[in-house]
Image (cartoon, rainbow, N blue to C red; front, side, top):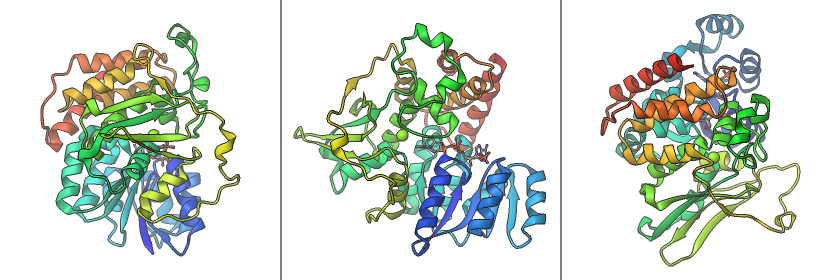
Length: 380
Ligand code: NDP
Ligand code: MG
């Protein structure tokens, strides 16, 4: 029985993780959860999964839940997230919160010796060196939930990293892949939230449309697989069937394919190297796809990806700035304060005024994250 601490239980990944637990009561138990503000869904999860510990964001929600669930330990705010992340009974932290708010709980869980299944890519982008070093020191396993990185993990299975020539991340191209830059000036939030292949949380769906998501994933791959940025490529794979590939030095490619359903990589991050059934409504048939398409990325069309490579190569605190600026810009777009094509401009502006600090410690990262958010808010 694997005991799971699930951060971000009410979100897209959180909800799918809970279906895996529900479908496999002999294999998994949820011992602690966190959610932000969605009290209706959060309450239903507490009733169904009976966690020992729960963290919510607001203190008023904590008080409400304490009255409703006297047997459950309820916490709130960042302290609450950190408390729940180290729940003594938990074996593995499945971190599915959105944004760099997931950093401190991840570091705490590693310190407490928990294994980590990480969906929360912003944490690796903002402080990859700290997270990976802590994981190595504590000898815990830190496995990706992101479908591309799960594909790479599977393709690499047993391979020595010296044999890798390239990691090739696939990208769908997002909601506006068939629009040119001029056409982006007219797009609405509603259109941006219609992803062609995946059903995800709002922030990630916007990140897919700008390709900041792929940029964050390039940095995520750099940290998870210890490869240089020059050895990471991105290609457009319109069908989202090939989830990513590794090219080896002998010219051989290994790819992982499957239906675009996050339950596969979520479950694999919890069971690796073991595998078991995921119950699909409709079995994936490779013959449904008579052709799979691979296209080069146009970096002029998707400047976000170029910004992310630049941030990654500069390193230090620059990825923290890119991530924090993007989080604020996307929130601004979602609530109507920012035009879609200005998301990239805001991030670029924040990066241009920042002098990267190399090998930053945790306090420096938190400070830069906070300052960047405050600065970008003044531009909205
Ligand atoms: P959602 O927006 O659907 O869910 C986010 C979860 O985090 C919710 O439970 C939300 O709570 C909680 N949350 C958000 N902000 C805060 C905060 N400030 N403090 C505490 N809790 C918070 O996101 P997704 O599930 O789409 O994505 C989660 C992470 O997984 C992201 O890092 C994303 O990049 C990554 N990921 C997601 C994939 C997907 O298919 N969805 C695929 C690959 C990676 P509430 O809603 O209750 O406020
Ligand atoms: Mg992904």
